[in-house]
Image (tube, rainbow, N blue to C red):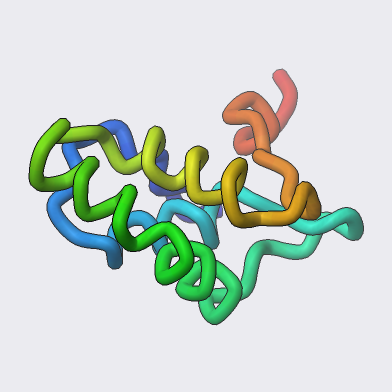
Amino acid sequence: MTDRYLGNEICTSPDQVVRYLTQNYTDAEGDAMPSMVALDLVTAGAGDIRRGIEVFRSNVEYLGDEAVKNHGGGTWTWVPEDEDGPDE
């Protein structure tokens, strides 16, 4: 598996939030969030994301999680980091 983008750095572009969402959220069946859905969430939260970038210097993870919380309709599940690697 390729390295998952965790969005720990300060956000400089809404595209980073889209990438974060597609790599860190799944639906009830465990399928990754499609890019178009992530883009819709980022568009719905555009004002908050813009303030997060320009005013608060928020990190990508925070902005993505807030977009899902505020505009995701409760249908998306964050994938914990410990599920990324094989069990030892």
